[in-house]
Length: 456
Image (cartoon, rainbow, N blue to C red):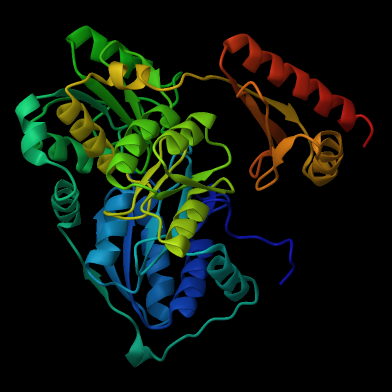
C-alpha cells in the first residue's frame, strides 16, 4: 500500500454519495472492516441522509461475508449508537454519517467495543486490508447474520439522566427551543428534555435527509432562525445540533449565539470545582479561555491535534474524564468519552438550574475573548514547505507545533496557523481581548503567509 493512499480522513471515511462513496465501494469497505474485526458482533446504524439505508445494506453485505454478525439499530444519533455498542457489549460498530457535511455527502465511522472511534493506527490496518484486497471470506455455512436491535435511543436517554440532578432541573420548568437540522438529533434530545421537565419547541424537526431547513453545520450564519425564535417566544435556551447530533451549539435567552468554547468553559468550570486537579483534553484550536478556566480552577491541560478521534483516544490513554472542542463537541467521560450533544445539553441545564443563572449570565462571568478567522489559498503540495518557512520566522516566540503553529503573545492574544486537512487552504484563527487586536493578527499573518508563498 502506498504511504500516501488514504481511505480515512480526520473523522472517518467521507465522500459524495454514489460518486465517491458508492455501494460497491461500501461493500469493499465492509469487507475490510469485517476482516479487521474477524467474525465479531457489530452494531450498525445511520443518520437521516437519503443514502444511509443504501450504504447500510452494502456494508452489511461486506461484514456478513467475513462472518460478522450485524445488529442493525436503524436511524439514531451517533452518540446513541456509540453508547449502545458499549451498553450491549458489542465488539464494535459502524456508523454511517457525514456529520456536518451537506446532504449529498455520506461517511463511515468505525467504533471500538468501548464506544470510542478506533485509533488512527487501527484505521491504517483497515486501509491495508482495503488497498491490498485482503479479505477473509468465510464459507457459505459460516456467513454472519443480520439481526435487529431496537430501543437504543430510549436506553441512551435513560443513561444521560443518571449523570445529572433530574429533580433539580425539573423544578425550573425551562423552555427550550431545539433545532435538529431535520436529522437524528430529533430522535433523542426533545424526549430527554421533556423528561427533564422542559417545555420544548422544535424547529426543523421533521426527519428529512435532504436537510431542507438548514445545512447540518450549526454555525451562526445557519442558525439565525433558532436565535430569532428563542428571543421571540421568551425561551430560556436554544440548542442547534449537527447532522449526527454529537455536537451542539447554544443560544441564550436574548438570542445570542455562542460557539463551543464558551459553553464548554461553563461545563469545565463546574467539573473542575467538583474534581480538583483533573486533566482536561482539548485540541490546540481551542480558545485561551479554556486554558484560563483550567488554570483558575486548578486543572491540568493536555493539548492535542485537531479532531474528535484524537481527543477521545487521548482521554482514553490518560484516563481523563473531560474534553472539549470549539465546534461544540463536549466529551463527558463519566457517560462516554465521545462528543455527545444531548449529554452536553443536560449538563448545561443542570448548571443553570443549580446556580439559578441564565445562560447569558454564566457566559458573562468568563474571561472574554474576541475571535477572528480567515484563510488563504495554498495548494496541497506547498503546505509543508509553507509551514517550514513560517516556523523559521516565529520559532523564537511562545509557540506550539502540535498541529500547525500556534503562537501565544504576552497580551493574552494568540493565533493558530494550520493547513486544512480537507481543502487547499491555510486557516488562521486569532483571538484577543479586543476585536481590533484579533483582526490585526489575522491580517498580519495572512500577509506573511502570502508573501512566503510567493517564494515557494
